[in-house]
Length: 89
Picture (tube, rainbow, N blue to C red):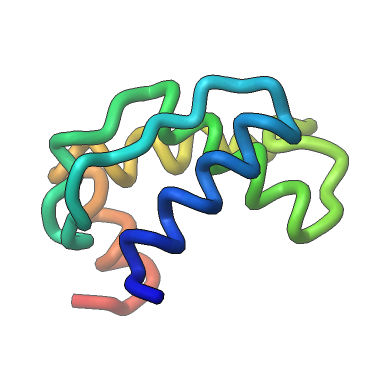
Protein backbone atom coordinates (compact mmCIF):
# COMPACT_ATOMS: atom_id res chain seq x y z
CA UNK A 1 0.00 0.00 0.00
CA UNK A 2 1.43 3.38 -0.95
CA UNK A 3 1.86 6.22 1.51
CA UNK A 4 -0.75 8.16 -0.44
CA UNK A 5 -3.28 5.32 -0.12
CA UNK A 6 -2.59 5.24 3.62
CA UNK A 7 -3.18 9.00 3.73
CA UNK A 8 -6.54 8.65 2.01
CA UNK A 9 -7.65 5.81 4.29
CA UNK A 10 -6.52 7.68 7.39
CA UNK A 11 -8.37 10.85 6.37
CA UNK A 12 -11.54 8.84 5.70
CA UNK A 13 -11.26 7.24 9.14
CA UNK A 14 -10.59 10.56 10.90
CA UNK A 15 -13.48 12.33 9.19
CA UNK A 16 -15.84 9.53 10.18
CA UNK A 17 -14.52 9.27 13.75
CA UNK A 18 -14.15 12.96 14.58
CA UNK A 19 -16.88 14.46 12.37
CA UNK A 20 -14.37 17.05 11.26
CA UNK A 21 -13.25 18.32 7.90
CA UNK A 22 -9.83 16.69 7.53
CA UNK A 23 -8.68 17.53 4.04
CA UNK A 24 -7.41 14.94 1.57
CA UNK A 25 -4.44 16.17 -0.36
CA UNK A 26 -4.24 15.39 -4.07
CA UNK A 27 -0.59 14.40 -3.94
CA UNK A 28 2.04 13.62 -1.38
CA UNK A 29 3.70 16.75 -0.08
CA UNK A 30 7.25 17.20 1.09
CA UNK A 31 8.06 18.53 4.54
CA UNK A 32 9.86 21.55 3.08
CA UNK A 33 6.69 22.69 1.31
CA UNK A 34 4.28 23.96 3.95
CA UNK A 35 2.54 26.60 1.84
CA UNK A 36 -0.31 24.22 1.05
CA UNK A 37 -1.35 24.03 4.72
CA UNK A 38 -4.00 26.23 6.22
CA UNK A 39 -4.92 26.85 9.85
CA UNK A 40 -7.69 24.22 9.80
CA UNK A 41 -5.28 21.54 8.52
CA UNK A 42 -2.80 22.37 11.27
CA UNK A 43 -5.41 22.55 14.04
CA UNK A 44 -6.92 19.22 12.98
CA UNK A 45 -3.46 17.62 13.13
CA UNK A 46 -2.93 19.02 16.64
CA UNK A 47 -6.21 17.42 17.74
CA UNK A 48 -4.92 14.02 16.61
CA UNK A 49 -1.51 14.68 18.19
CA UNK A 50 -3.14 15.38 21.57
CA UNK A 51 -5.29 12.25 21.25
CA UNK A 52 -2.26 10.05 20.53
CA UNK A 53 -0.46 11.40 23.61
CA UNK A 54 -3.66 11.37 25.70
CA UNK A 55 -3.29 15.06 26.49
CA UNK A 56 -6.18 17.04 27.92
CA UNK A 57 -5.98 19.52 25.06
CA UNK A 58 -3.73 21.40 22.69
CA UNK A 59 -4.10 24.70 24.49
CA UNK A 60 -3.90 24.39 28.24
CA UNK A 61 -2.33 26.87 30.63
CA UNK A 62 0.90 28.26 29.23
CA UNK A 63 1.02 25.66 26.43
CA UNK A 64 -0.55 26.33 23.06
CA UNK A 65 0.30 23.61 20.57
CA UNK A 66 -2.13 25.11 18.06
CA UNK A 67 -0.28 28.43 17.92
CA UNK A 68 3.15 26.74 18.05
CA UNK A 69 2.39 24.49 15.08
CA UNK A 70 0.66 27.28 13.12
CA UNK A 71 3.70 29.53 13.49
CA UNK A 72 6.24 26.76 12.89
CA UNK A 73 4.57 25.52 9.73
CA UNK A 74 3.54 28.83 8.18
CA UNK A 75 6.16 31.38 9.25
CA UNK A 76 9.69 30.74 7.93
CA UNK A 77 11.32 33.29 10.25
CA UNK A 78 9.77 31.80 13.35
CA UNK A 79 10.54 28.27 12.12
CA UNK A 80 14.21 29.25 11.73
CA UNK A 81 14.23 30.78 15.24
CA UNK A 82 12.66 27.65 16.76
CA UNK A 83 15.16 25.45 14.89
CA UNK A 84 18.01 27.56 16.24
CA UNK A 85 16.69 27.22 19.80
CA UNK A 86 16.44 23.45 19.56
CA UNK A 87 19.83 23.19 17.88
CA UNK A 88 18.57 22.03 14.50
CA UNK A 89 20.57 24.57 12.48
